[in-house]
Image 1 (cartoon, rainbow, N blue to C red):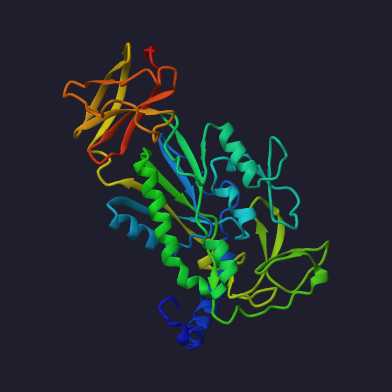
Image 2 (cartoon, rainbow, N blue to C red):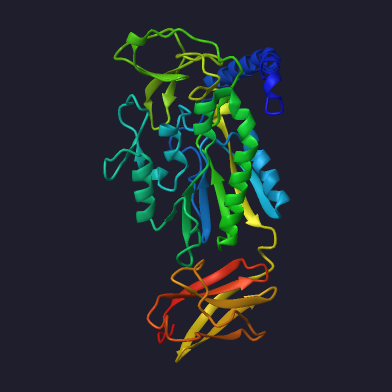
Length: 390
């Protein structure tokens, strides 16, 4: 579909639908039959997502398993070492339910009554487990929350990071079938952001997602579910109202297995016939990738700053180095800040290096001693100030 010219879009879409719909429907029914015998893991049934020292977790909404494989190929072409694992999404496969399950605070999330938004709550505070509250809870755990700006470097050592980026899911809901033409660009943006994190000093990036999705030109088949029987009705899942017992399959909610939701059979949709949808039970929606991305030469060069001593405007440092050559620099306020040293200096074989400030302009400023490899990648850094030894 992405390769079709504008003039041929309708013809290609019709051919894709003819070939794809029966395969999608048959595989979804087979998957649903399998889950009736062996349900997917509920709360606590999958390993908790955590960042190790100097690892940043990157959450990309809607990174379906096949896209995870394509992302890994792009990263490997950029010289990264990438491994692809897999997880089962939390049910139903909508962001409100599934996103909290792939955060480092998933163990603090609980479900009570299934509400119309499919959202759970943070146990200690009772607050909704939405994006803002999840980020606040992670920050309390010591995670560095990265934003959309360019400042991606770890602020401490060791550090643990969390970043939300990517527009696959939002574009899918907006563009529907035309999403196919945008996926290549989105994967390129994700790979650029990931390599940017590695260049900024993170040792590794762990990529997670909440759910996959279905896409069918012309729309997924409509399934009848009377509105008066539901408290909330989304594309492929619905909260049943009161004691209603509509004639559709049901599945247990991830956050509280005593609570049930209605799920559309096969690849059906309860609402209008969307071309792009998720929330139901299919391998495309439920099987998600988990990537661990590292710089291919990560083990070759490493450094640790062991001491910093100031003599006037000159900074003396001792650095433990293994691997290739490294250099030192003094930067303003943050690791990626402007260089304020008279010159970047190579660290001597015995680990010694000295840097000088050309004048007293930054005598009272917050500085960062940064150690970089021969490609400019930050290996380690340490905050400092003129006259303060550490």
